[in-house]
Image 1 (cartoon, rainbow, N blue to C red):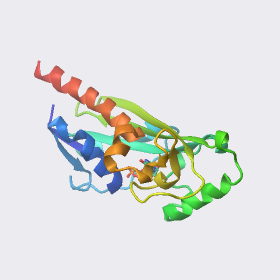
Image 2 (cartoon, helix red, strand yellow; image 1 turned 60 degrees about the horizontal axis):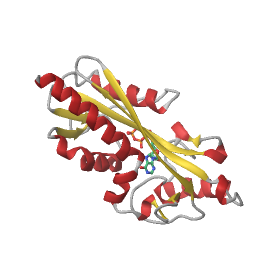
Image 3 (cartoon, helix red, strand yellow; image 1 turned 45 degrees about the vertical axis):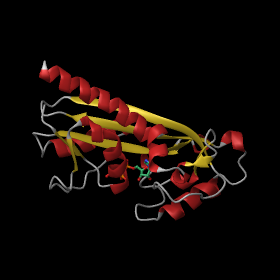
Length: 204
Ligand code: ITT
């Protein structure tokens, strides 16, 4: 198996979290930009898994010697029928700031009691291998939508995603704390096992 992992993401925050968790795999980890590829990918799948595979395959078709991974993730709010879900990046408009996106969601949940504010972050990660095979894993973290914006770490919807067990939002956690329990952390740890198994198989 080739030793380079290319992550098909244009999101620098995701890349930081990914590097922190996969660093001890002993493989070179680069973003698609660092690998010299910068393409717009149309994410027209119906699930997180489909979109992750679409992204990984789009880059895998170009970088045929590398293992290409992609993350598709988002926030599911139960009270809103699991919206914004796979449309999380597009919610309220692609170029709208997260401060505004978060305020729109807080407004939609105005007056909604605590027990109905349940939500989760979901992350699907797909890996496309040079032989054309694909492996997909999913990670989640359960929480609820807070009553106000809180915290400056992380990105996206972190300032409104409250984790009751920790008494704070994921934007109030250190990167290490967030990675230890987040949807992306869980998906990456599952993917790490898949990659580890592949490495082992190929060295046998
Ligand atoms: P790539 O497709 O280039 O990877 P993206 O930001 O467009 O980057 P997605 O299509 O997967 O990524 O959209 C995910 C969105 O879900 C992301 O932009 C955030 O709004 C939200 N999201 C995902 N993971 C999150 C996290 O850990 N914390 C906060 N918000 C998150």
